[in-house]
Length: 115
Image (cartoon, rainbow, N blue to C red; front, side, top):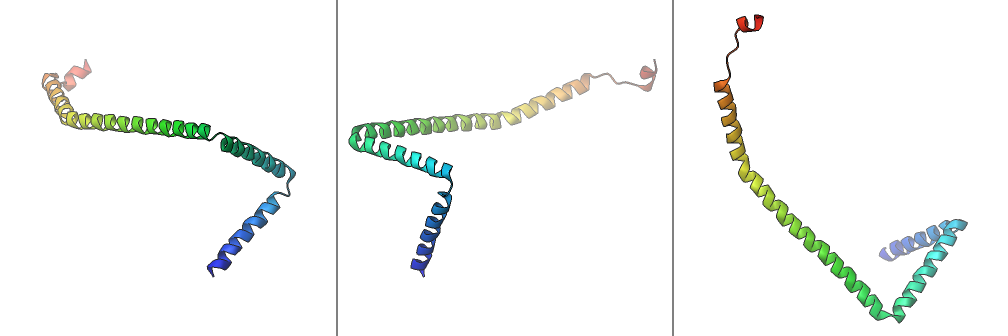
């Protein structure tokens, strides 16, 4: 059963590729991409050191980005903890300020508003 399944998938893929290649523009683009890929493979096959250097440069770039993200994450987590610690203090400050203004505010009577 598995062999028929895999064969069916392969046959479907081949049929899909053949049908899509009936379009001239698709054929031209596919041919161009295959030629480009072939030239790149031949170039790196002849210049393995260049391929190795390019791969190492990419790995270093990814590591740099990863390290930067890790540092940023630590920084933001630290700032979040600071905000969490400040929140009760800010609430108390706002409450104290509200109470202070409530104590100092003059009371307004209906006689005062009529004048």
